[in-house]
Amino acid sequence: MPTELTVGEFSRMTHLSVKTLRHYHQVGLLEPAKVNPHTGYRYYTAEQIPQAQVIRRLRDLEMPVPEVKEVLAAHDQSTRNAVIASHLDRLETELDKIHGAVDSLRSILEAPESEVTIEHRTTGATTALGVGETIDRDDLLAWWQGALGELRGVVRAQGVDVTGPSGGLFASELFQHGRGQATVFVPTEGQARPVGRVLPLVIPDAELAVLTHRGSHEDIDVSYGQLGSYVTAHEISIDGPVREYYLVDAAEVADPTQWVTEICWPVFRFDDDT
Image (cartoon, rainbow, N blue to C red; front, side, top):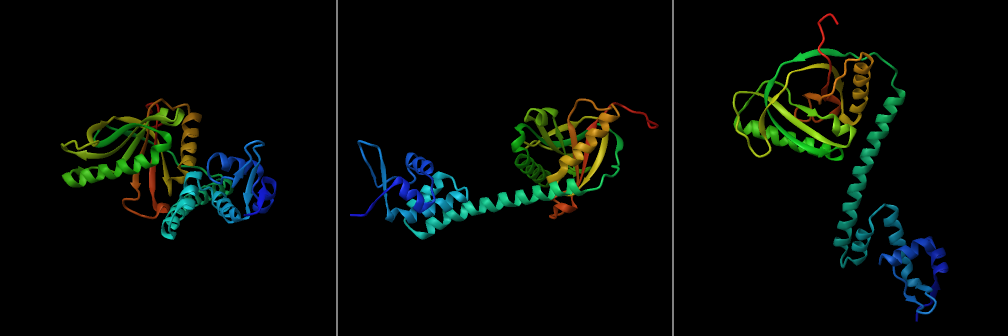
């Protein structure tokens, strides 16, 4: 009969705290070999130590408990490796995001203060094809990529004449409350058939303060802050959706450092000499 180990002994041998072992028991991840029905004391065996070590390492890699269970229950190595590989892929994606955030933070902290160039522009109403939807702020990037891809596919399929760069309209509520209207569009000439989410629309005329952001959208919030500070300081900001125009984006250049995006803030009507 295997030697019974108290929870304290097993904790010292596996470097898993008593509290953690209790939790793993409750969720069915690592159950004791025996539980005294009268005292409730839990006992483990030395044969469970390797399993505990595997669990500890997988949890150190932030693998969710259900996936750890899949690894432990796998009947063959290929199944087990597939679950682990999938989790490692997610970790690498998260690590890339962290590296991007670190680089962006360093650029903010280390960049010297400099003047930014703000252009004032009047735009007329423009016919376009677009995709619009009320979305959550956390879903914006994935939605934006999918909607732009769908929109450009319809434009190509119908042979529509494009009259300018693609763009986006983003309601204030999207930033202020985490949910609001977002629209991506391609300015067009002539009539086009609606297909799925892609519909004809008119981009309204506007008075805009414009700042050109160069590079990835990872730090586009810095440019938003500069433009917003400018229009607030000059007391010309008004309510209305912020616009973006994608002069150079992933459709033209894969390298995000080469992207060029115009950020357009709605402002009061101004005279040329203002």
